[in-house]
Length: 125
Length: 225
Image 1 (cartoon, rainbow over the protein chains, first blue to last red):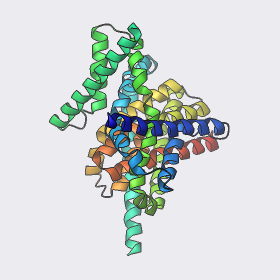
Image 2: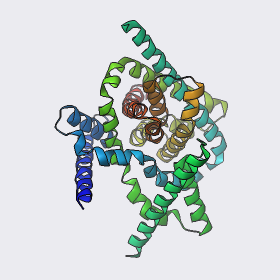
Image 3: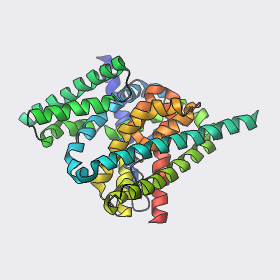
């Protein structure tokens, strides 16, 4: 019982930050589109960094959600059957394009970051 | 009442299949047997076999989908735990992300030319590497089709999650932060679900990459469109 209440409290804190993030997002959407969940992430980070929220206040529930985060994308992937007809005519080419592009982007951005980090580390020594 | 029961049944089905897919993934140790992909494929198969329309599944699916917002918020936790490493590598991180945005645009332009893809689809693919709300917005600015962008973003995420371990191994990426930036900048939150599995530092960098890539992409699109 105690564990359930603890989980509910932790979940409420996370949801509250998410809702505040959405609210801020809607306030600035005419200037720039930043999704509410991204603002929520920055907000939670600031709250943790300033000590207004202790890590222990959200840690257990947060880590649980992160461990199973792939689960939340399952219905989204199932929804592809709905949009399939939009890309049906060139589905084969599109998947190849996305595959090559994703591979290239992942490799180059990781490699450049890797290179810049080792460059920084060498110069610091 | 029946709607609530249908909704609960489909949520339970998704939970069971996801658990099962994690088991399959661990047992066969094949990165292409990604749990998201495997469970989604089984669900699609079940819907087809029993002739259930997607709208019925969506009754439960939308409940699960409502979790997509808050999960990005909690990514602040690995970010906070690894804040010093992230901060120390601020410039390499920004450098890597800028490279990712340029590579995305260049590769999509070249590949769409090569495969003679319709302009409408081409414009919709440009934003596929960023988190969905940003992708929709930047596709609107570019004049593409939002539904195609969302589909492309999901497919990209699944591909990214599947190939990440291979790219890191054969690309000889040594640093955890660099691995995370590569994953997050190419395949947003779905890729990040794989990054957090590799280890927490990779997950933290991947989370940073989702936010920064989204932010810089929308700025690039505003400037160029």
